[in-house]
Length: 399
Ligand code: C5P
Image 1 (cartoon, helix red, strand yellow):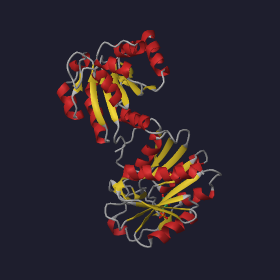
Image 2: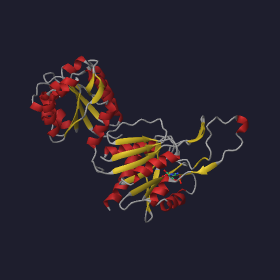
Image 3: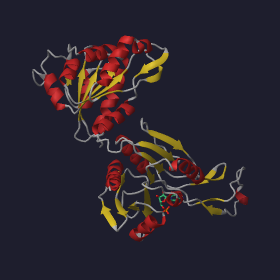
Image 4: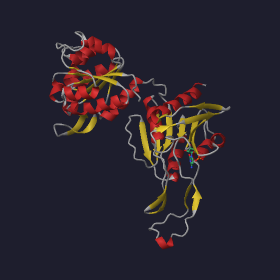
C-alpha cells in the first residue's frame, strides 16, 4: 500500500491512450490511494464515465457547468488532491495548461492547483515534435513541482512507428509513488541481489531453492521510489519490474551472481544481499542428460559467499545489509553472520513464523546491527517490510 492516504486526481484528455487509464486507476487504488477522475469533453469519446466511476469509486468530474459535489468543484478538487496526474496529456491540453487556458473541468482544476503535477504526454510523433508542442512542454517542465514524463517509442494509433506513445500505466504508477515520497535516497547507488540461483547438473536438471525474489524486488522498488539508482542482480524469478531508476541484471548461477556483484560493487554506496544463493554447485555439470542408471553420485563443491567476499572488499562509507533465514538458534546464527560477513545490518526472518519467508507476500523480521542493536517488527506485507528495512538503513547513513 505505497499510496496509502494519498489523494490522486487523474485528469484524462482526449487521446486514444485514454483506454489505458482505467488500468492506472486500478493500480493506484490497489496501492491504497483515493482517486478522483477529471475528464475533458473529448476524453469521454474514448472512455465512459461509468468505467471511471466504478474503478475510482468516485463521481467523475466532467463538466464545469454541471452540478457535481459543489458549484466550485475545480477549487475543491484542487484542494483535495495531493497530486494531479494528467494522462494522457494531448497536445491540445498541454497547450492550454502551458498558457493558462481554463475552459474545461481539467484545465480549470489545473489552474487552481499548486501541488505536484505529473504530465504523461501522448500523441502522434509529428505533433509531439512540432515546435509549438515542444515549447509548451518545455514551459511546463520548467514550472515548479511539475514532472513531464518521457513518451515511449513504438507503434502509434495512426499505425506509424515513432515517438509519442504514452508511458505505460505501471511506469506512471511508479512515478506517482516517487512523487508522493520523500526523495531521501536521491543520489545513492544501491545494489540489491534477489531471488534464488540455479546450479546446473545437466541440460535438464538443476539445484535451486524456494526463493520467490519478492523481498529483493520490493526492496528495489522501495529504494528507487525514494530516489536511489538501483542495480538489481536477480536470479531466475517470475517477477516483473518496471521502474525508471532500476536496472535489472539477470543471472542464473551463484557464480554469475558473484561476477555481476563483483563488477559493480566498488561504485555502490549501499549493497543489500537478499538473494538465496545456492551454497553448493555440481563439481562437473554434464553436457548430456545423465541417464537414470548412471546417476549414482552427484559431487558438489561450495559456491563463493558473495556477501562475505564483498564484506572483505567493503569500502569506507559503504553499507552492507544481509539476510538470514533460519529455522533454529535464529538470533545466534544471525549475529554470527553479521560479524562473519562484515555487515552493518542483518535482517532475520524465521521459517518458524507462519506467513514469513519464502514465497509469501508477507514477512516478519528482526533487524540486528552493531553494538547489540535489535529491532523487532510485526508481520507485514513485503512492500512495507522493505520500507522498514530502508528506514533502518537511513538511520545509519545519518550517523
Ligand atoms: O550463510 P547464509 O546463506 O545463511 O547467509 C545469508 C546471507 O548471505 C544473505 O544475505 C545472502 O544473500 C548472502 N549470501 C551470499 N552468497 C552466498 C550465500 C549467502 O551473498 N553464497
